[in-house]
Image (cartoon, rainbow, N blue to C red):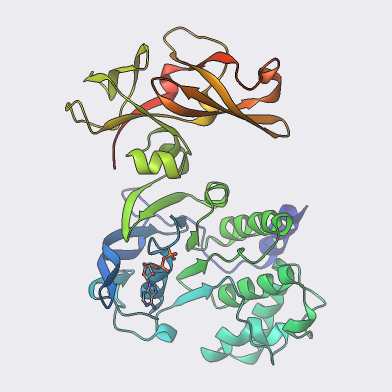
Length: 383
Ligand code: ADP
């Protein structure tokens, strides 16, 4: 419903060029070019040599644990913090020394930070007024935003008269209304309950798709990142650990941190490995020898582990599969799925997420064998 409505509203009034304006080479144009940014707060390094490009019309998510530098990176891009070194280019222009208001960057925060003494319409129109857009054009644009965000009829209300979800929609409208080059969103759905988050994710996806807005989105929630992102930059201790499409990070994690944090994978000890052609390796792990993909090019015996995602494990054997034998140590029911923890004498604790129907007859203390198709295990370097 909401999608067709959003599309309809835009069909009539979209003022933007199509999302993916491309260079002659066909590669999307870089809008934001972040070059070797470092930032320390006193002795604490918050960012170390972060380089990233954000392309026209993409939604790039910064995903990482608390304290990994996501918010600091957004603040440096927005101009609320000065970098210790490095620079930020917006369409090739160095904006590192401009004040926040002059950067052409919109922001949406977790706590909506709406102006309490302004109505919905005034909040949404604020950026336009600041940029001296004439009254008629301002009213047209605000009307368009209110329609797009399903806030019609609420234009005269004050923030305190709105629900959390409505307030967050006003905050989105305020950031989008003046058509900034880039919109930065810092955990914008963090304060909302789960049902509302999912609804708002859908709305952000729709806005992103229909307006072609370029968005840098911060979250620590892997599910949210998967639902929204064109690309994800995984941050760890002030650095970008890996950047890629969700699918790529999921199926070919660059290292053990990415596999563990993003794909929630088991990281199993490897007895020995041999690199083969075309990104594959022969790996001995537990009692099995398998041929699987690899993202390490190291031939050294240590410094590698086998990443096996929880949902890759099942009870049915398949040719060439990794076999894991152990005792059921824990069972947790999640509706249609169950999380089974096995204690393996050779591999330690291994966690599987399986269809509940596949778990029939399992009980605590029981000895079982689980299997992972060889193509779904990945040999990765230890981060
Ligand atoms: P994230 O958004 O990923 O949780 P932050 O960017 O907030 O991470 O923080 C990165 C690091 O910088 C952390 O170690 C944090 O404690 C530190 N930090 C952030 N803001 C400040 C500040 N204003 N003063 C001192 N240290 C800070």
